[in-house]
Length: 423
Image 1 (tube, helix red, strand yellow):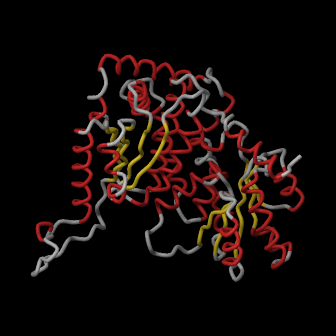
Image 2: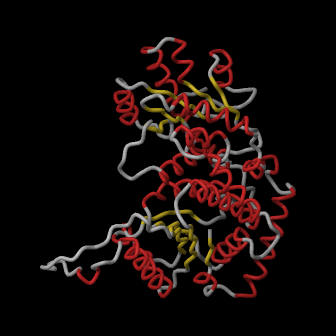
Image 3: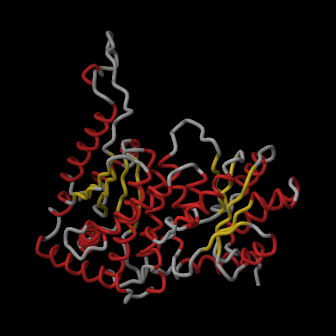
């Protein structure tokens, strides 16, 4: 991974940026030593190197069994599904069907979504991975109740026992009680790992393994990022990223726009938005994390980015790999006037669109951060996710907020429960 902040640095005072980097170093020390707020939720820092061969084998064995089914429904919301969803969507082919279909549920209360899901599963041999620490979070709990009932209509208890996997608290909660009673396979959500930092725990690794991807390579990439991103050094990309985004925030930018030029990364941005939105958005502080897919969204939001309210900066996630890009052919009639592109491959054209967009936006006073990765694979995704997690902890501490709680989330729940008549 390569971080390029050149087109963001020109918008800030260099001396102030140097001071902000020193502050970011101090906050990394706070994170590393566990002396900041929320220090009882730092178990994610050591996840990349915490697995024994037996731990990986346990995950792989369950994944191998579940892959024999037509499809597996992953039930979870927020951090309980976004990391897996982001990784699977990034790695799977755009159009080719995978062996075992991975379906996500429990992330919405939409009635027609669940009705269509139940209908779709009616002739499928399906399994369930249900992910919830408490087992009572409304969206996943309702989805699990619906799908568990469907299983009980169709399958005997032994079959159900083979087809349900629970990822939950080690000792307490509704799912723990059910799991112990029915003998389902289970994995633990550690008390010191919060949901949005859980992608490198079984919460993310099991669904990713069921999808057929290499979780050991993902952990390897994260381990390499751990070596780099925990260094007390101004060249540390996590320090630089945390510093420059806070400088831009202090200078009046209120929106950070995650940009991709590869549709595989659309859900990566969804994972990133939760990570930063829930970690920083407190005490009336924090950048608002948003996302766009270019060049698609240049034809809808490009006007605003270029010429609208000066409230945002861009964080461009660029993939260098162009190995499978087709070449524009010659056309004798040239009715579309595209023969000037003859012989050029699509990723070359895409790269020039990205370069031209960056030049135009920077000239229009839109700061630009660029993060490059060689290719979209398990190693690079593991590296990138760990990098963003460390930078998030640093950045939130710079804002003087607790990165690991989410008190504002409870407000809507209380009102929803009141309206639904929950005691």
